[in-house]
Structures are given as structure tokens and as C-alpha cells.
Length: 432
Image (cartoon, rainbow, N blue to C red; front, side, top):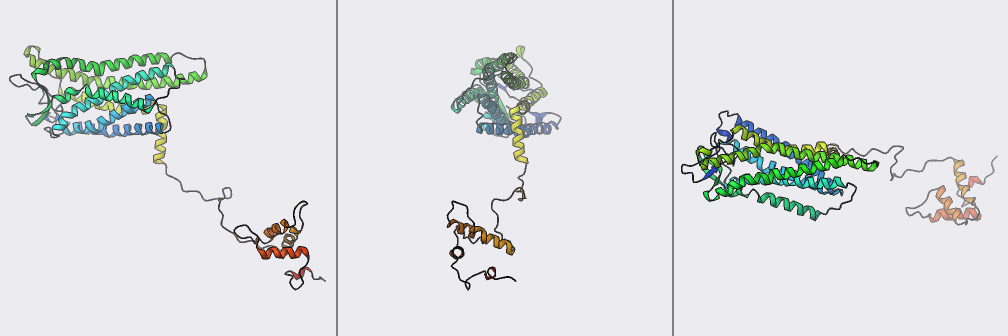
């Protein structure tokens, strides 16, 4: 329920045969018309910034899990951000639209599921914090213990949390309906007379089971975990582990405190509205005035802002998330530099062919005579091949010596070549 009828959130018919009220406020009926623009603008700011923070945290968690850093606590933080993302993605936009219009125009399905979906996500966050506190205490009690957690176990924990969270607020879906109002259709919660007894018990048990019990359980285990971290050890390695455990405990403890503080006004308004409706059905003697409209509005904004505060706490207080955020920012902002040109200290592996430099006559004589002098123990067949490679470099692509070059050096070594066939006759002429 997202509409109020005037300044009174309890709508009763003359015969008192139905217990009918709506949850959250009809802000278009207020005198200051600027509120119909201001409230959706605030919700839009919370939605955009909250989705950016939650998606960033989820990306960091997926990156850590891909590198093998899968743990139960990180998985529970992921579940918390997932629930926050669902609230920001599916609940806040519908509330913003309903606040800016004079009547409920989102249809019967949205009326039946909007409040139930919001309470399911909030209950899932509360149960997740409770399980997180227990996991934190187990880790702090023995931080050096290697615990192997399987993906199937994590999915089983998630299934239990979400089934419980979706089952508890079923009356919000069961009794929600559309009802004609002063300015058109309004989405209200109508409880038939045969269910008044059930609702009388439900409005007292539901806050205890979803808000008080899980958060009290969480605060108790976080206190025990923090007391465990205060015990100092004489070993340096254990001291570092205790420092890391203390930081983890403080981060999760701050998440619990933020949930308890920002969600408390919404629960006060929730109980206040239902006690007001119950008093109206019982008669004028037990009548309780409904909460003022601005208080209901502030309570809802605070509960929605919790989905923005949670990822900010994780990103600010966790060193692992800060390092992951810096790495993600570098990957998104830094451009790839073009490959540098090879210099004298960085030659390329593949060099283009270059022509053989010109040499003087003395150097050519030394190259030709050089292959004649071989080391002891080497064969004479190897010398011509080495000389051919050194002298002319006349080698094909497969590294084989060409036949004409091999024959030339063989004739020079045996001395059987004739003068007319001598390619260098000036070597044998007498100089004056």
C-alpha cells in the first residue's frame, strides 16, 4: 500500500465490517504541491546512486570469486547487495511513480505484489545479517583454520534465507486490493472480519521475528566476536590475523547498526498504522490516531536509503573491496598505450634483410685465406663450408651452401685450377 486517503491512513466503512488501511502515504493530496516533485526526485537519486554502488560491489565480489577467493562471508555480502539491488530496481521506481500521481495507476498486480516484495527483500537482508554475524564469530574464533566452502552449501543457505523471507510477509500480498477513493483507485490492505484475530497476533509477531530477533542475534554475536579480537597474541602472524579479523568485525557490525537504525522508523510506523486500524475496528474508546504523513514519508525514505548506505559501508571499510575498486577503476579508465617503437636497447625479434656492406680488398683476401686455416681435429670438408658462409654469405634460405661456391673453394685448396680459370688472376701476378 502506497496511498493515504487525506491525512488519515485508516479507511473504515460505516458498518465496520472491514479493517482497511494503506501503507506509505498519498503525497499528492498534500497542500504543498512541491512535495509531489521532491519525493520522486529524492527516490530517483537514491535509486541511481545505490544501483551504481551495489553493481560495483557485486562486480568486485565476482572478480574475487573468479580468482578463487570464495568465502561464506563474501557470499553473504553478495546476497545483501543483491537484495538491496532488487529494492532499488523494482520497488523504488514504483513508489516514485505512485507518489507523483493522484491515484493508483500501476494495476492490480503491482498493488498485490509491491508491498510484499519490499518486505521480502527487507526480511532477506535481516536474515542475511544474522547468518553473517554467526559466520563472522566462527571465523574470528579460529582465523588460522582453513575452511573449504562449496558452492552448493552457499546456494543452500541462500535458498533457506529467501524462502523464509518470502513466506513471512505473505499477508501483505494476501489482503492487498484496489479500492475506490476520493481521487480514484487506491491500493489498500483490507482484512476481512474472520482474519482480525490472525492480524492481531501477526502485527506483534511479525516485527519480532523479522526485525528484533535477527538483529539482536547479530549484535550479540558481533559483540562476542569483537571481544575475541581484543585478545592479543604473542606471535606476529597471529597479530596480523587478529587485526584483519577486527576490521572485518567492525565492518559487519556497522552494517548491522545501519540496518537497525535506518529500518527502525519504518517499523514504528508499520506497527502504529496497524494498531490504529485495530483500534478503529474495536470502537472509539480504543481508537489510536494514525501517524502523521510526514513521519510516514520520512520512515520510508530512510528504509530506502539503507540500500544505498550498505554498499557504501562495505566499499569504505573493507580493504579488499577498496583494492578491488581501485583495480576495477583502473581497468575502466586507463587506455591501452600503442606499442613503443624498437630502440637500440629493445631490438625487434624479426629484422628485415639488409644488403651486405662493401669491404676493401685486404678484408676480402683475409676472408678468402681465413677458411684455409683450420683448427686441429676438424675435417677439411667443414672448412670450405665455413669459409663459404663467411666469405660470400651465399647460402640459400635452408642454410645449404651453393654448389658453385663449394667447387670454387675446393679447387683453391687442391691447387688444380688453371690460370685461365682463375677468377682472381691479380693475386698471382708479379708486382714491380
